[in-house]
Amino acid sequence: MKLSRRRFLRNTALTLGVPTIIPGSALGLNGAVAPSNRIVVGGIGLGPRGREVLKGFLSQSDVQFVMIADVQKTRREVIRVMVNRQYNNQDCAETRDMFDVLGRKDIDAVVIATGDRWHAVLSILAAKAGKDIYCEKPCSMTVRESQELADAVNRYGRVFQAGTQRRNVDNFQFAAALARGGKLGRVHTVHAGILQLEESHNWLPGEPEPGIEACDWDRWLGPAPWRPYNKEYVNGRWRGYYDFHGGAALPEWGAHTVDLCQWGASADATTPVDYEAEGQTIHARYANGVKLVMRRAGFKGEGNWVAPGTCPIRFEGDEGWVEAADSGKVAVSNPKFLEGGTPATMAGTDPSKHVRDFLDCIKTRGKPAANADVTRRGHIVSHVAAIGWRLGRKVSFDPVTETFRGDVEANRMCTRARRAPWHA
Image (cartoon, rainbow, N blue to C red; front, top):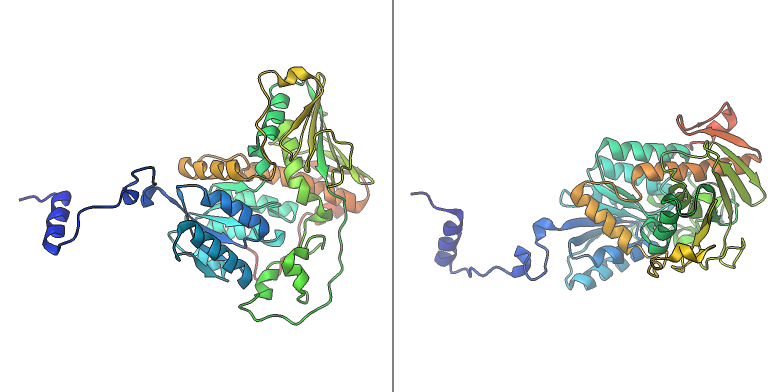
């Protein structure tokens, strides 16, 4: 006689005296998400920004965060406590070895928020390991890394979201919609706010290395050139040093604002062709004649921007202009652009909608707003502009071959040597 699975389980439960009541949370009842429908997530290198992004993941009912890898014990402990408090258990595992996260078969996706030197290499390793990837920006250190990252994500069929969350922030979306929808008329100029262009090749003085469990200095350096340990580096003071930071510090802010200008100019599939620095301003031009202006926008109101807040952008067309910045507000040249309502006020640093976009695409296998192809070209623009600034002359770039036109010196600067064995 055939015995159904349901009847077998019921009879077994009765024989063993096991209750047949199953918690609703295990079945996805009462608003809970069944374990089989949850996205299991691990983290690698979650410092201050990583913790803000992690909050966006922990707030989602269909996410289960299970493991943190960090070379610094204090940081991984902070994450473990934060996660266990959220879930009211002690289940979050911690490790200093990123391969423990990448090797877990139950982990679907990873959040990468290390320093810039690790972003591309780790994302490629994660793609090879079959993980979907949310990676903080800038996602690459060079033109070549931008290419390698996108190629790997596409080759292994992974979902990738760069941490350029402003594509999913209301006021920036509103500004882009005005530009892309034709309400500004023909868009002729887009402006990206950037920080001061500078970089240092100096080293901080060497200090005694802590024990490997407290801070694995060799792994912290990763693909970057070796240099003596200094606690300031691991406490976030690595920015501004060429070996650890994108060229001229331009990708730091440009990863957001140049990316948004690419979007507003409907140029996600290309890059500008000409770049020329004039002091702290970089002028670029697309093949269709649209201009991209990268100009100062620090924390003290530099640059004569209208919209308040950091990371401002401005789109100009024949019929007027619009600006947006991290305050969540917009400024427009004509009140008619606001007909139909203004965008909801949402801080430009808020990753919540960006995280949700990533999670939804994991389920549908679609492409999120800041996917690998969009990120590739947007980051390349910042790297190319930095190379031109460093050379101190005009440079021309081919968006099809993604190389400088007849410029051997500039093309040599499109890549950097990576310290063995970190060749992804």
